[in-house]
Amino acid sequence: MPELPEVETIKRGLQHEILNQCIISTDVRNPNLRWPVQNDLTERLNNQKILDVSRKGKVICIKLTEGYILLHLGMTGKILIKSPESTPQKHDHIIIKLKNKHLFYNDIRRFGYIEWTNKIDKANIQFNSKGLDPFDKNFTYDYLTSKLRKSKVKIKVNLMNEKILMGIGNIYANALLFRAGIHPCEQSNLLTDLKMRKIFENIIPLLNEATDMGGSTLRDYVNLNGIKGTFQNYHKVYNRSGLPCKSCGKNIEKIIISNRSNFYCPFCQTF
DNA sequence: ACAGTAACCTGTTTGC
DNA sequence: TGCAAACAGGTTACTG
Image 1 (cartoon, rainbow, N blue to C red):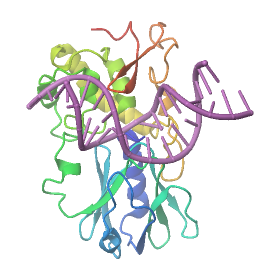
Image 2 (cartoon, rainbow, N blue to C red):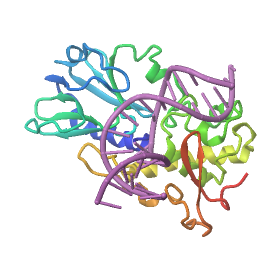
Image 3 (cartoon, rainbow, N blue to C red):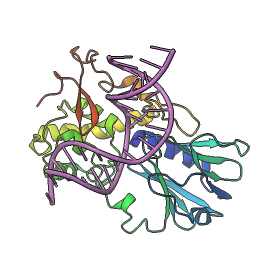
């Protein structure tokens, strides 16, 4: 589900809702997520104060008095803030209880994960052994092009490669390639400087626009308060196969790359 | 080492 | 209507 704009929306919500509060208790109702939930998670979290909430790519990082919670929402993960009186629903796997509110981690497909770590500054695999978040100050045109030129895979695949660029998933890779006017099947290392520049220059504006809209909701995604995003109403190509391109009027086409659907305009996006 | 595919899981939509 | 197949915001383990 959630790519960078959706996760950023949730992160901002958490900063507003849970900063400086204490975790009273934690309820692990189903430990079978992407990776088994650590069996000492409850003891690690209880009585810890929440000092900060940050994000890298699609991973949310909650800084505690001791250590950090890393949270990934997979495809269908949600965090919902509810009153202490509310009862668990189906697929509510973890409940983190604060004094006046409870955080429900709900995940239908269980592709997400939650873990406690104290190694955020070292080589934590989920957080620091990957590529750069596009909002990282070290994420430059030179960084991006040096990565893209080293690989022969289709550019679409590399835009979703977390070892290059964290946070871009299927929706925003589709959107980015439309904005840059690039065919998703073009080989990464063969892109011209101009095309690389177009990709780079469209990343931040695209992600900012989507975040301003509260992200995109295809089906499951909602923010902490259960509210859907609205950026899906502005998608130019995603899920629009057979419909006319909003720019040139030609029909949007769909192709499968690496088992993922890709939507593109055959006139606006060329080799 | 690299590139491509299959698998993890549940729910909804599509097609026969 | 019923039932099976296809498909969905992600990531990684396996295959050639």
